[in-house]
Image (cartoon, rainbow, N blue to C red; front, side, top):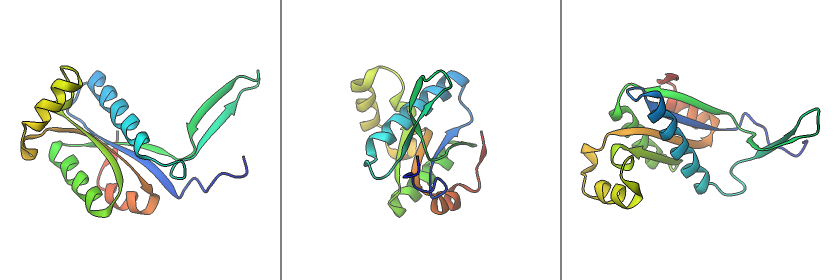
Length: 142
C-alpha cells in the first residue's frame, strides 16, 4: 500500500456527448476506457486491490481518479481530440461510424467518412492532472 504514487498527480477523464441515451453512453464509455487502458504502459497507471472484512479480494481498481464529463456536441470532442494530439496526451475516441455492424463494417464506415463528417461520441484521456484539468475545465460533470 505504501508504494503507491501520489494519486493526485494523474487522472483519467472521459468526455461524453450528452446527446446519447443511457445505453449508448455506457457502451461508449466502456469502449473508450478499455481502448485507453491498452495504450498505457505498466508505469503509467496504478491499480489497487481491496479486501473486504470477509477477506474477499476486489482486484484492479484504478488508484488514479476517473472523472466523467459531458460535452454539448461532437465538435467539442473533436477539439479535445485535436488538443490531445497536439500535446501528446494518450487518448481514445469513438465516433458514430464505430457503433453498429461489427468491427469490420465499422472500420470500413470510418475509412469512408471524412473526418469533418464524423460525429464524435466520446473521448477518454489519461495524463498529468494539471494538464488534463487545464484542457477539460470548460466541461461539466456528467
